[in-house]
Amino acid sequence: MEQLCKLYEQWAGREAKTVERLAGAGSNRAYYRLTNGEGLSVIGVVGTSRDENHAFITLARHFEKKQLPVPEVLAVSADEMRYLQEDLGSTSLFDAIKQGRSMGGQYNSEERKLLEATIRLLPRFQVFGGEGLDFSVCYPQPAFDRTGIMFDLNYFKYCFLKPSGVDFHELRLEADFQKLADRLAADDTGDTFLYRDFQARNVMLSPTPVFIDFQGGRRGPYYYDVASFLWQASAKYPDTLRQHLTDVYYEELKGLTIVPYKEHFDKTLRLFVFFRTLQVLGAYGYRGYFERKKHFIDSIPPALANLRSLLQEGVAEAYPYLNEILRALALQEPSVVRTEHPSAELVVRVFSFSYKKGIPEDESGNGGGYVFDCRSTHNPGRYEQYKHLTGLDEPVIRFLEDDGEITTFLESVYRLADHHVERYLERGFTSLMFSFGCTGGQHRSVYSAQHLAEHLHQKYGIEVHLCHREQGISQVFSCKS
Picture 1 (cartoon, rainbow, N blue to C red):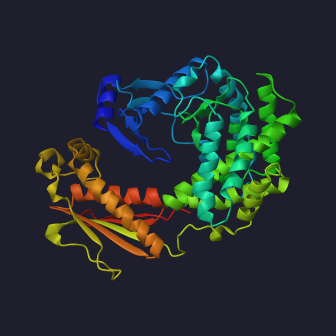
Picture 2 (picture 1 turned 45 degrees about the horizontal axis):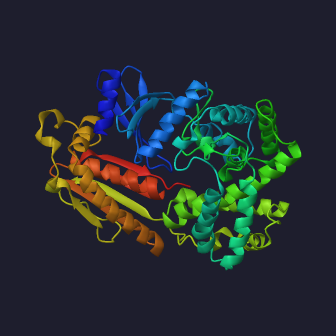
Picture 3 (picture 1 turned 45 degrees about the vertical axis):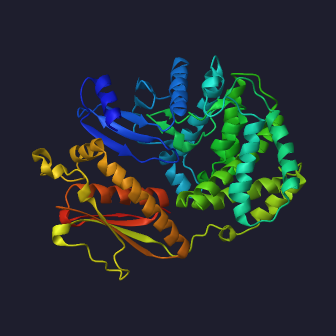
């Protein structure tokens, strides 16, 4: 983060007044909101892959030249591992339509208008965005092709189908996978840009729709993005709304490029919806079954409901053995699929404390769990400017992270805590405790406890009770449902 702050200072001509870490989703990149204290804010991004960052930066600048709605890239570090982009606010399309989603797909007129405005923009993005684009910059591959299709199908097989326990014949399934891959790869729509992960979370309202997180895009058929957006499992769009938005999209696309007849378009779209559903189930299987992320486990039942509807329509009948296996899979109750998660809910309690006042007592009767001694790390409390602050205050956070000792310390803690939480989830235990102590229970222990609590809640969706004992501060991170 220190290097990101330096990039901001170079761009703005002054230090950032505040730096706020933003919650991430499925990405490995870290996002921060940096402000100057006078109302101006930007988003800072720290990536783990130079190639992925390069793809986003290059695509964003290309799309901006095409006058497409994307965030402006403001500054980029020399190694392209960090960059600053326009701050679009905090309201995504996903947030704006949450009422309709919570009502089981009963979207009101305002929510429908937002969805329609978004789907109208998509063809411009795909057609104009692909014009003159050097697809070689796309990451991790320049085009949607047969190799990528087979990768996604096998992703589904190994990460979802095998863990489900449904028995199948590898060679017979492979033969139908090959046949399906041939059919999908044949639908080349020219130099159109395939967003790849077009969903409501990747559309910000500022106040009109602006597209983000397109770094995984590539050359490919436009059907895929429509399937990704309208058949997002958790969105619960009713069939009538899906059909209306598909028709809106088709009319917009027809005004920009040559398109097949509507009957052929709809039939091909259904095949891509089928393929996208398998790909999504593979992702949910990996993120849910193997990484234990509750959000993805909760997304499996609606995705299986989508699959059942598609099978009832006969979309997989040209692939008899695959159709047979998927019907067996779709008939399973969601609880039959092996998530290895018990019904009991794990609650983790995290404390910060001063060793002078003793280690926190364990009220659960389980023995107190882990106690980590933070006193080996550099102490901000030794410096006058930090003595009246805590590990929750930005100057102390910056001191600790710039120094780096606390970060290295927590990396080991995270590995140990993650393993322990996963084992407790598997075994059905309901209580776990972590405590961080330092000299005064004010700086290092507070920082460490806060970060572990946020880390465990974000990664596993579990309920976490956080207590900074010496500061008299308590916080509950509720179980994600």
